[in-house]
Length: 568
Image 1 (cartoon, rainbow, N blue to C red):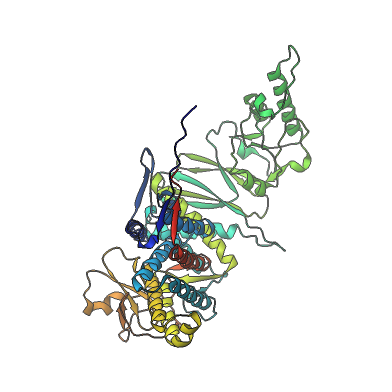
Image 2: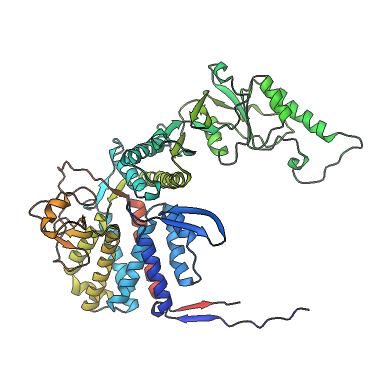
């Protein structure tokens, strides 16, 4: 009998935000995430200590799962941000940077933790209430009659991933493809509940990004084109197809669980092959022209089908099953032992080949209007291609969110600086009354307000990575970047447009450096007759949720009194 080890006592950490080790880890995490933020963010190489694949990225959806810490307090913050990213795809770094800034500013302000939590909730309420107003000056309504704003939104997501290494023409090309693919998944005539389609991504390494394209229907990679070279000779009518979700390899293991009784002298391989050939005879009789299987097809059955002019596709995989069902209307057949019902057959309008580099793709054209499309993404190497795929997946999700809320927020830090100026102005007008309602002193209220606003401004400042200075104009409260090599006396000539591109500098404008004292003012609304269009936009739904997650996570962190770790 083995000796039972004595149970170790649990480790208890009191007031984690007063713990030097935890604060140091929070500081390092903040530096790491801030350095990744925005289109000029620095890349990170992620790899396992014992080897394996090396990933180069600046995307929160790739980076955050790779960050692990033995400290539960750090994992609490990371897990909260990851949950946001899993639901909304975008604004993960924004949420993380703002959350850490709120924690840091609350500590530096000297306000009691419970008071800081109440104040953060109050200022979050001011932000969300303002963002939902019709006259919100940092919100842009989306017009689905024009693709311009949608392309701008897509371009903002794609260009924020520097590991994709895209030139300006390439980024614009991929942005247009992303919007085109998204629009193809939205049904034009669908009364009642609308069901969106799917975008299937096929990646091609070694080709130019400008070779990327979008096609209605489904493109399937065909490693071996033997037996399907007669595509051009197919009849012009819609082609009947059948789809099997069960293996047709003829193995006993594929027949399912249970006991199999075999008579003495019986040849099981021959009997199973006979059953497979019976399936072949039926599909030939039913004039099927495309035979697709999710798994493997027995070579004899393949040869039989091809000898009767049927195109055979095997090893389709689970990923393409659902798009193929939606495209063709086929019902997957899951057994070998019954006659295939007529309603299980689907249709494709036509078949053709597409060549992208070394890849030969079979194009299944939809029989009518379809919400299934294929995006073929090309790039020069695997690392760039993987990051481009992540960026396009995020873009698809962000564009889908616009159907729920057809709005976008100004990007490039302009929403953050505008909100900070708005909260300062709003709060200064009713300090006495609000402080009384929140149960704090006027000094605590003003300190909490300054901490919240500086946290927002620090997110905007995190976009600059080249030594430049971040500024706020004292008219519209937009974010500006002054290059490091420009002297202050030449500032007006160098600023040009604000970060989002909606405000143009003028001699009458005044600026202030971010995170410095400037006079409180009411941000002026933008002129409606301006010819300027925003260059950078953020998802309204994703950013609003990220703002809420950042504040709520920071409040949870401020509220933690003890960390108890079971050391056994």
